[in-house]
Length: 341
Length: 213
Image 1 (cartoon, one colour):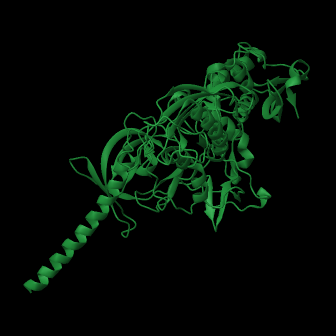
Image 2 (tube, rainbow over the protein chains, first blue to last red; image 1 turned 60 degrees about the horizontal axis):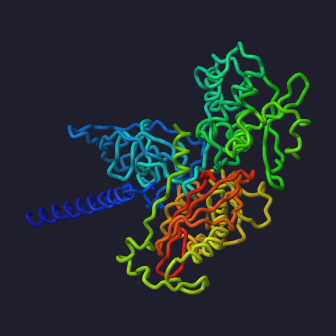
Image 3 (cartoon, rainbow over the protein chains, first blue to last red; image 1 turned 180 degrees about the vertical axis):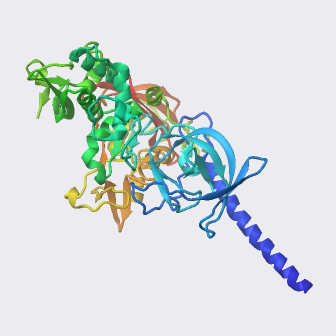
């Protein structure tokens, strides 16, 4: 009997030790990847576990309302076990409160375990608030979802040799309505997340007493304060029909972008105010020689078509060619030399 | 806030901590010889010291390749085999990938990249952005390297390689300034840090764009 008992205890101990080792490995991995290097401006270089983010869920997946049971210890450590699936291992959470940044394009997940259901697609350098870390190598976000520690950094990723090019994403799911938007008297862009950013901005920088030209100038001035920089925007095929809205949203959210973003932003802002505006795809004559692919904005006012080109205006200002309005409300007769189709 | 961060990013300097540098390469087994002043400009020979000529000539060779790799990794653009992109089936995330002409695998692409950039730089910048995450720019599929064709970007820099200026040089690490123009001929300047690696090759270990001319 004693011998049997001894064997049973040994077995339990062996299994416990094995589990403990596995957990330790997870912790070790995330510790390494999240250690910022001293006196550098880059983030950690630990490559995320390629096996981790494999998921076959679509970008339109939304969070499930999975029930979890949570117990909290005095030390601030929480043990969480999904109640509806006893086969899923639990994880321990340790409360923290810090801001971190995404180092890659990745999904947040419903649970702090590998292969868990995806919730929301995050972009590189997206800022997230971490409320807890788990012993499975994940960080818990404010919305209760999890992102693997390998994908998070204390500092912003210095992308593309420290210029500001970034990849960008639309939200994976688009809401049917956004509370409060019905209070605005602007024309919708057809993409509610853009409206939600644009409408309050229009309230802020324009007012009804302004003339049409003053409103357009206020919009133009706002965009000139943003920053021209290359970026990569990843737009899934299913969202190509709202690509222009996503360009505009990218600029408003990030504060920088390329001509596509500026033109789209100005177009939808002008449209929201009731102007007949459209984004134009063509060529721009360079300062020295040749043409480059370019987009700008045309607005028809009293039957006359005017060019508005905030991105080139920014570059002209940068190079010391302009501090006024060289590409604001100009006809093709005036500056058509620079534009071609 | 984002704007400020963006501006700050454009002037920050990336880390210099590759195994090729003089500071930490003793432990990796290789050292950089800085005692012999003799050098060669032939890229096939082993360079022993970065002289002024070596820095200038290396820069001319490296920068042209750097522009190509920049486009590949950060603009997500490459020549693809003839494809009607509309006929490509999107993957589980909704993105389409087309076979590229220049490389047939990620490892081949990496090997080429590391001829011009230090491995450390590549890992922290190129690979992190383009190869990791849920939506990588590139995919290795059945011996074919494919690129995400739903990535949209715009940009092209033209380098003035006749106006390279050496800012500093200690024989193993040289910092140079190179003027360039962007897609709209807007004038800018970049700073490169070139390091002499164990194999006697000069590589880029740091790169800052968008500086005022």
